[in-house]
Image (cartoon, rainbow, N blue to C red; front, side, top):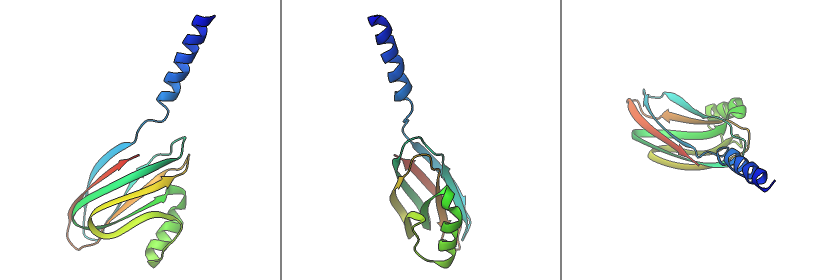
Length: 128
């Protein structure tokens, strides 16, 4: 009986140890002048805090919002207004570091916009 309980405990530990895997996503994107590109981070079972860093030769603007709030975020971006739909943002910089709290079961959009007329390469790193 004790052996069965030990085995059950080990199985539960292994099951839950892999459920909250660390987020480590790195992407390089080519951006034309004025172009937007999105990075989508899939939903997880638990709430998490994500950290996003973007490095680019030309200035970019980065916004983080939930995928379910896409329409509201795009409306706020188009109108150049602040909105609760946008969780974090920074404008016109070559090096950007942002953090955002993400609820459980919600996918995240990280939108990177080239704010110049020149092409650039941006590296986007996302961790939790």
